[in-house]
Length: 177
Image (cartoon, rainbow, N blue to C red; front, top):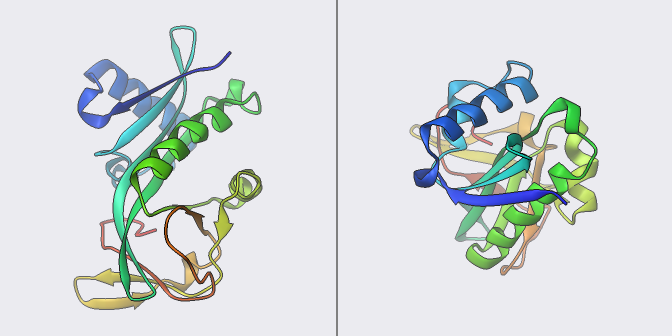
């Protein structure tokens, strides 16, 4: 049985935080920027363990997305990664089970930006590809984020969505979606 622990960022001790960053650097093959790491902090973390060794990580942080004339409180999934030697053994699903419980209990909506190779994984879990145009509310105003249109997925919880409508994310450094 896979053991998954959920903790807030404030409860991650230095040793665990360092292990999470190392695992993610490996899982993302060195393509996890400092901004990406920053995006994963400040919310709830799901940590999967293989005995005493960290096997996987995912986090959910609060963001605001605008849709249909409303500002939605969104559980945004970040930094999902599993050690390479343990992939395709259920760790990713166990991590997402934990985060999806948090999302359903605390947010209007779940959202994430999926890498191409992860799209099937999320869609099988009930995440829906956003079909409309995406934007970011930046310090200089509303900016179209066309390059992110195909990667944004949502998990409906409490609000009706028009998947072909506009979706606007709040601003942050690095990748906005």
